[in-house]
Image (cartoon, rainbow, N blue to C red; front, side, top):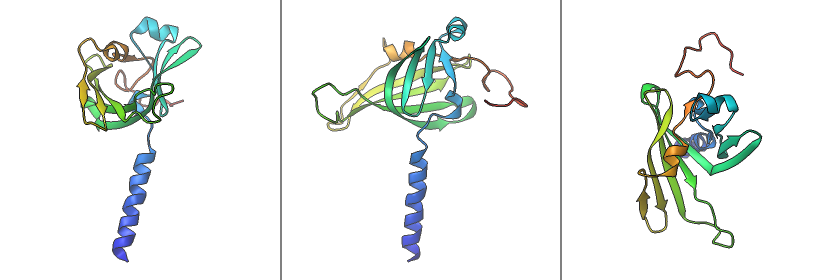
Length: 159
């Protein structure tokens, strides 16, 4: 009886951990390529259901259903993002493949991809991309506005 209760408690805890599918707090807000893009409101937002490119009044989905896994905290911040590959119209309901993107904090207090791989869950094949990868240019970003990595936020209210 006690073992069953412990097993059930473990499953509940695992379910609660999996339920927090949103991005880590460090990725909140708008991220852009530089100050001019930040001022124009152009950049990338990390959300629980998608990673989105933001242009003026338009939003475009870059990666659907991302799953964020925080690997390190503090100075050595790294987050692994697993995302589903897009499905072809008329193709199979499940592709069996997914992408894995690892973002890390940079010395300028921005983030940049340090690894990007496409994995096929059915065959085990992997394609590692980093050279000439569009995701590198797209996701080499710095935070817009106040951010804990740039300045002390002690005494400020979060909105």
